[in-house]
Length: 189
Image 1: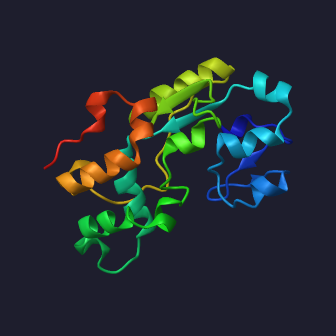
Image 2: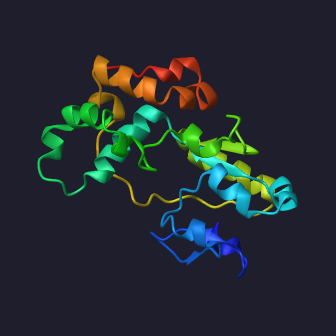
Image 3: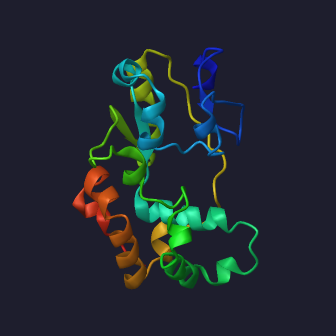
C-alpha cells in the first residue's frame, strides 16, 4: 500500500521502508505492531471513527511456529530441539509478552475486549483479504509478494498433544474472536 501513501501519512514500518510516525510514544515502540489501545489515544475521535481500520490475523498454531523459527533464526541447534523450546517458551512471561508472540486479540481489541476494527483479514487468505481492503478503500489491488518469511515446514508437524493444549490455551481469545471451533485444534502428525 506504500505507493498510495501521501507525504504526510504515517507509516510505522522499519524493516523494509521508511518510518514516519510523528507520535513519539508510538515511534519509540520501534516496530510496526501497534495495538488498538496504543494507537487510539493519539488520534482525534472523529478520525478514529471515520478511518477504515483493518488488520490481519494468522491461525495461532501456524503463527506460533513461524514466530519461534523467526526469533531463533541463526540460533545454533534450535532445529534439533524445536518442540522442547516451544513448550518451555510458553512458560516464560517475558517470551509471552513479546509483540510477535502476544495474542492477536490483545492487539486488536478495545479495553472492553471487543474487536475495534472494521475488517479483520486472514493470513490464510491473504490475497483475498488484501483485495477486499483495497476495494473498500478505493485503491487498485496488486499481487502480494512474500517477504521476511521464516523457514520451516508445515506447522502441524511441530505439535504434540501437550504443546497443542498450551498454544490453544494461550491463544484461546484469538480462536474465539477470529477462528471457527474446528480451526482451534490442529491435526497432530
